[in-house]
Image (cartoon, rainbow, N blue to C red; front, side, top):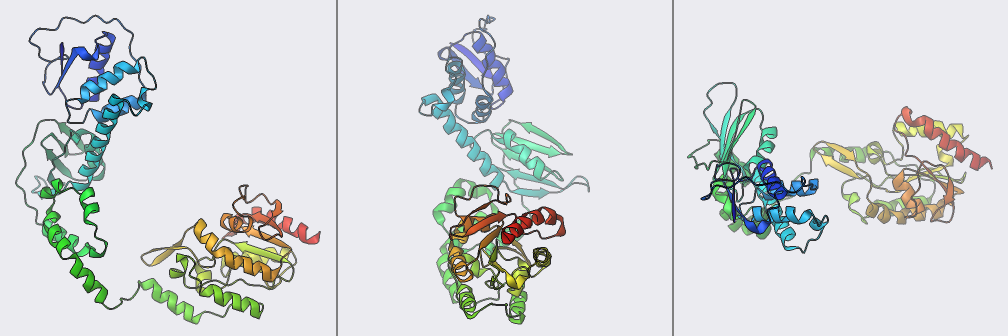
Length: 471
């Protein structure tokens, strides 16, 4: 039995050199007794000095996937990690696809250890709590943290903290090594550290913030303990509040339900005022009016809860031309009219080139309520989801039945999906005539340009529409 000792618990470079030498010497896995943390020479301290090993085989070759897995598995605390890795290395020389065979005992054991190490690293990033200590100089603040990992993950996780907290000096102490970042340099050690006795005056502020942001209505105790196991609680300042917050969650939910409704965010007041002052949309007939009233009360998808109103279509469509846009923009949402901003001016100019006016065509949307993402006082449009397009297709179908267009022109991918269906997998800017799901000819164009910059290519597509009208 050959006794092999490694100075480091988790140094993949050291393990690679030793394993390569053993493999080139054709030493089988069953003849090796692995040890770590001995601080000896290449082959550790042995009762019988190890003779020089003759190298019989060529240098081994393994995939990058194996080396990445080995670097992770080496951080595991189990003493079986070294025998497992060397057995895999030995077998990979004759079985190239071994790592892809999950039921193999060695592969399975390595994957389990790899997953455990990654999870431990994730928990370290989430649950390290720094305490500030007096600084030696006035230039950089100093912090110390204590953490108790299950595995030797300090070396692989410390760069994360270096990148995030590079403007201060800090130390992370653990029973399985420590990391120190001072003056922009990271230093690692595998020497076990002892837990310091530290207090931070900001912990009271942090616990107050944690308690105030705790939402009892969304409490799921099992899910919380799965993500934040109790073994980490003793080093988290907020953990002392958790039992009390959990116990009082039911009563707090009842109090929240009994409270009066609160005012919505500030931007809702602006939208409400603009909605009350909006002009009545131009509707071609009573049939269109009834259609718009029905669409205004639509709750088929969640967009009605965020948008100001459903935006009506505009124009009579008596020329037989119908334009279907993706969705209203912010200005359309406030005014209740399609293309009420700069895109509308561009459309008017294009229609003039075709010898038409906006009232002679029909302009509408595939999605009647704008899909907004609220962020503070601002709102940002997002692309409509397939579910939202499908929910609004009902209104577009009714509108097409009223207009009876000779040609439907879509502007954008969401509009093309609604008009041409799931089979629409071609380039939307191709300008090719094709059959719509409504049984009338259609043409897919690119999205309506918001500025003059995209007008040139869009104008070419409108010329194809003009040729269709003339013909």
